[in-house]
Amino acid sequence: MPNALEQLRRIRAKNAPEPPDVPEKPKMSLQEALGVFGYTEFRPGQKEVIQAVLNGSDGVLAVFPTGYGKSLVYQIPSLMSDKLTLVVSPLIALMKDQVDALQKLGVNAILINSTLSEQETKVALAEVASGGVTALYVSPERFGNAQFAKSIEKLDIDILAVDEAHCISRWGHDFRPAYAQLGGVIERLNPRQVVALTATATAKVRDDICQILGIAEAEKFVRGVYRPNLCLAALHSTGKTRAYDIAAVVTEHRKLGSDTGIIYTATRKEAEAICSFLKSKGVEATFYHAGLSPAVRTEIQNQWAQEGGTIVATCAFGMGIDKADVRFVVHSGLSQSIEDWYQEIGRAGRDGKESLCITFYDYADDYRTQMFLIDLTNPSGRDIESFWKWMRGEAAKLVKDGEKAVELKMTQKVMSVASDCVNVGGCIAFLKKKGLVKTLGRGRYQVATVGEFDASDVDVLRQERIDKLNQVVNFYRSKDCRAASVCAYFGDDTFEGQCGVCDNCSG
Image (cartoon, rainbow, N blue to C red; front, side, top):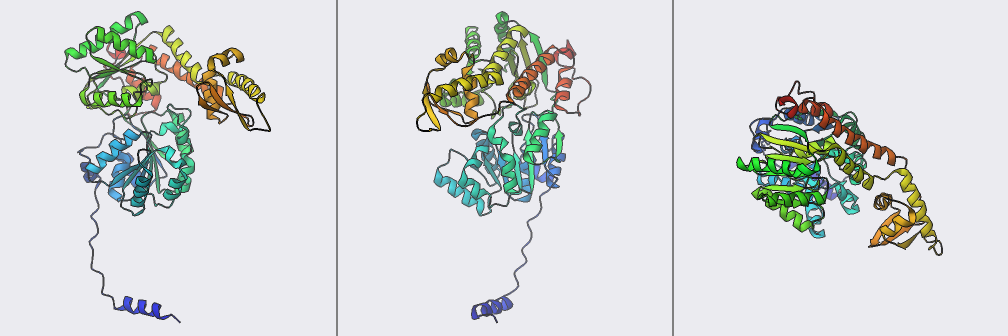
């Protein structure tokens, strides 16, 4: 028999007036949603990808070029459903730009990253938990925070979007270990839909992305690789004449009143040297590389984004650049891969106007430079094993009472002589990733006295980088249409024939 409280609830429920009819929120059409973002037409391929997301297929992978509107693939479905979309993005600046843009459109989007205090993070999570947030942006590293992971697992996530998804695959470029953990994150969160997006992914990388994310049966779309407003060229230019060739490109664009462009170099030293040469010829230019402080780099990038001009940079000048009127992208020397090259030329001509993407290279010198960089970052498995055997031996001499780690004091220069190893830095970098070595300070390293590692995949990855470099060489030397070759490389079958404007087509 029900108690008095239960009886009272039943009486109230029975006598309560009928709730008023609340009209349902009118459903937004695809075209209306597109209009919210200020567009009147979808770009080729955009609509079918968005439709696949709305239909709730078993995952979606979209490969769209830089500046093609990849974010609309998850933003429009999110806007139409009014449910939570969780976006994994690699850069704080990139997150902030997207969140700011969405908020201006009236979309309740927020971000949680290292710029927020502990209290601000708690408030943001509470807001998300209340159901009032449409889009939440986080970095992949954020899932390593136990408190955040616990809070996020309670949410009902409609779409989990992974931006710059090529960072997941070791066979791609810009690999980030935190991205590789996203498969486990997705399994715990169990979103309705997983969407992966990138500008550069070969068939091998696409398969790797889907396998790691647990969407092996995903619908895959490769669209827009061919951009008709970009004129592609690769010309032989020796080290002695290259600075003059680059200066000629910049000067010609300045005469046309459009000197906003990027010159990419392989090394910091070359970036500074070319910048200095341009200035000596009366061309205003700025250099940018990872050797500058974060504050200086931010200042340079912001000034260039607002005022334009010519910037000479290493690959550190990368993701997060969104300037519409870049009229030229020049590469001084060989790129590390076709993916890197394509990602960088993708910053040109986002306004749809004609832009030049030209590479000046000398096979012998530039190949030697790139192989040096590969040796620096990808030592052979044999070198790593040999160096680790020596380093472990040195650490063993200092062990007391079964210590699991000891401090080794020695500069890399001394280590190089003592261990007979050319690439000490590369070996240490690898061992740090394996958790066997930790840098404590200049010339001070913490070395594990227990634990082993498997270097079986080291040579495979090294050879993969060499193979990619050779693909770049073959691409530059080829007499085929540049645009057709790039489309074939990335698997975009929507372009046929010849572009008619690249150096090979036009002569």
